[in-house]
Image (cartoon, rainbow, N blue to C red; front, side, top):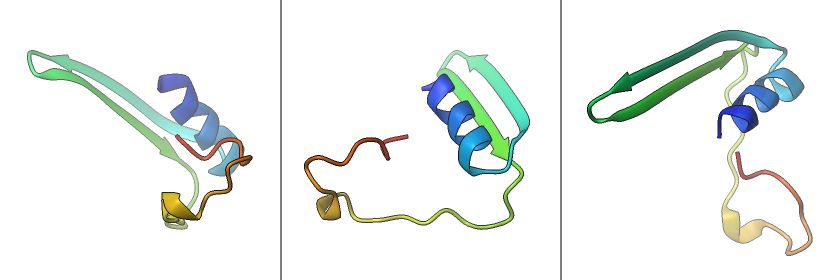
Length: 57
């Protein structure tokens, strides 16, 4: 999961600008920030083609 988030920030978000990892008794919290000022575009998973690769992260 970490590599997917960081890779997406680099490839699609204009570069990685922040990375934070915090372990607590409740779990692991990961924050990745990219340089993009645009909000992400979301799509309905039902609209995916069966042969489409990626788009899961």
